[in-house]
Length: 266
Image 1 (tube, helix red, strand yellow):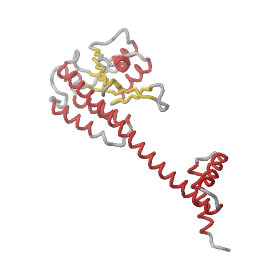
Image 2: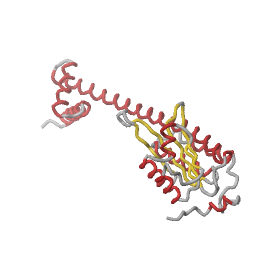
Image 3: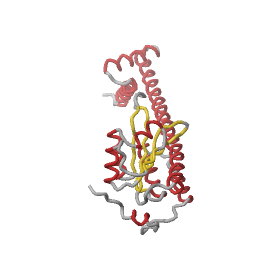
Image 4: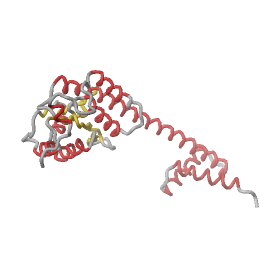
């Protein structure tokens, strides 16, 4: 399939901005982008949404970059084998990443695996045929895959660009490096924030469950004339027999007692 590049690529290649583009995109723009990313820190957004917004912000501040993606490896819910979480700025990055991560072949895969920068100055790359084909099909001229580190390597930032022969260190690579380091810190902090919020929620739930169980124990002690230990054993036995959580058994018992108490005598 012939390459189809965005209409802005020729304008960038000739050194003149496309209509509606900001030709400067200087350090102040990068600083504003970093502030925007920092605003994501204390939000309840899911991690993949934060990553997607990071990738989108990057495309708005670095010249010639039309698509970007962020990928991280994190333990699965059982804490064993890692799984990959990928977020893209747009359908182009999504298509490219779907191919390279599906084929387990491409710069993003290698940068994610060993934490080194990978710069594709020209396509195709014979060792990555699937990646090269989809990148060329999407009109990509060159790519950057930069490790995201926060103490240790844990992710990668993929940058897909058009409109120039290859990357420029000052205009493209250095700003992308800054963004990758900063985004890694924000993403790690946001993950810790979500984990802490979840733990607080679990603690509140545990406290509520404990209060419900203690209330049910008190009611049982009063009704059956038994000790606290005996009342607890009754609840546990009922929970096991009915295959219900202990808190649910306690709550149902309380509701039953209150319902009987509230009914008028006949």
